[in-house]
Image (cartoon, rainbow, N blue to C red):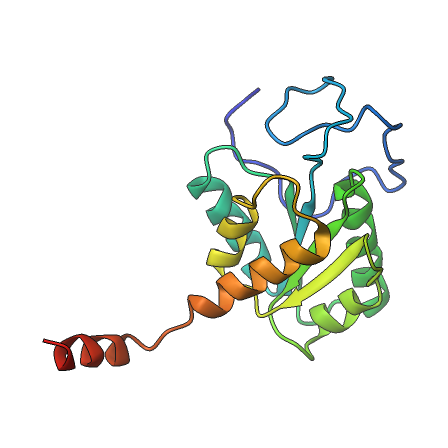
Length: 177
């Protein structure tokens, strides 16, 4: 497998079918290895305004040694909502290997989140808003066998825990001395 930059953005296969039972690829397995085990792969799709999604996914791939399936859809400020929806739908179809897809967006109420919410489907697609890099790192280090809803909860929790005011941390450390 080459070590060049991984492609970002939506995939080229618009109508991807799920693999037949027992042939789902596991994270870290070479292509072609049949599975049937419980550690099936959840996909992650980052959808944001501007190029943020592309850069977050690129950074996570650079940090994590063997990244899980991740893609990005970066929406330009003047993108058509219907076209954005089609791009998100294609990317979800490409990422869904049977365990579902977590869509992370930049902010609740923004166009990326609003469009992504249309794809919410229990057990198949979950949406988490307020994406940051620690969330993508956590996604790549989820415990084996975690389900889609729990994975989304863990990712959101990690993102919240990494939002800090550095001055408050320093003040607390100085007060504790």
